[in-house]
Length: 286
Length: 252
Image 1 (cartoon, one colour):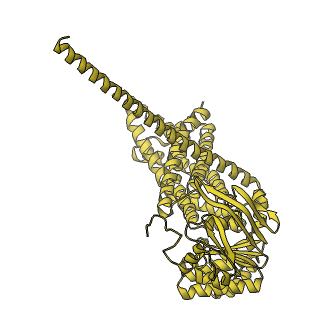
Image 2 (cartoon, each protein chain N blue to C red; image 1 turned 90 degrees about the horizontal axis):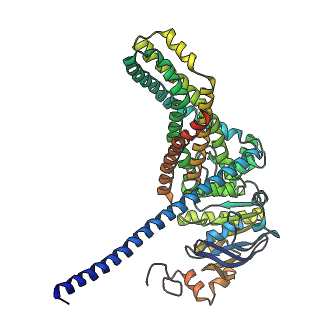
Image 3 (spheres, each protein chain N blue to C red; image 1 turned 120 degrees about the vertical axis):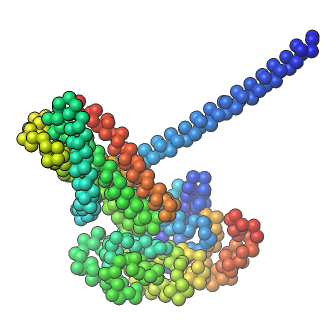
């Protein structure tokens, strides 16, 4: 066997050895990814399971006496009245910018008369419920998670238990009921203010015909658009309350834990609103 | 009477309670001592039923509360009062609302009547004129007193104290000890306190139990504990860093 052939064989052997090492490394890499994915999946299912259990416990406590009227009305003020200014500002400017963009866009094909319809449909079906939900998630959801989280780390929730008071009934049920009632109420206000904002830009600032604006709005707007928007906001209200209370209720790790719970509540509530919005819309607006 | 039989509790792989046996007679003042992480808080949470054991029984006046449903457990808890280490006052409520919480919720008392009782209980723990303050306006010692007033407001049969003197200056700590003794004498309650403050333990205890590595290793009167031959108990009560108890993560 010539020297060159021997060298070639040696090279080939070495390459094969490297290939084997590479294969093992690759398998290890894939294994690590699968193991990480599995761990994340397990954490996700654990969290989902705990949220479902909390929902079941909340439902059970809603129907068991006594009713928490005082706490619920306090939470309705906290979530509803205190969120009102920011909801009003958001709704009016959303309606205004929607009208402005639609007007200038539709003008290109002489369809300015449809601005009222576009504003009304967009606000009632989509923007009213979703933007109100996101605002409440950011303001009231964060507040709920921080309050319950602080109560957890300072043993106030344990104190409730020792005073023979079910913390789910005392803390979570009022927030859940308030969320489900208040969010649609805020959405109704947002719908009205959004449409008025659109009217202001279209008619007052851009000089469109007022009667035509309203006629086109009412001609194409159906009650189902409003109802379905409110059904969505009911769901968003309940979801924000449950998620935020869940994050606060299971807080661990002192002040840092409260911070994490608050951030987690806002992020998870917002994601839930945006994702569930698509599926709810697909189901409700067939 | 409170009786714990072969109590086991684990959190993940951490076996915290490893067969605790302890009996507290009616009207007795029991103090459970033990180092940080020995499972004292876990033990007291089992007595009031906020934790359920993995194995074993917790008898409260002959009823095993580990086997009770949630609504039955809440009824048992009405017979308890508990003072928390950090007082755990509800910071969204005024002082009197904290004290009257159980009265208004379970006693169905009207606000005016509940406030009267709350003011009376606050007076019992040496606080006058604080009923309309918020907890954030109180000092640490005052918070503990309000916590004690809340614990006794609904006239419980059993009182639990979680580190009652921790975080207080020596004079305030002694005042709290005196209050605990006074509560026991005036209200004839069965009490269980957990602490690592030996001065407090000797003062308020009828009997002292030492919890070590998840087990009760010695029970006796304060005098018996002071004169014990058990090296572990001796090291703990004398507060020596050298002995059979090793400090976790530290080499001596």
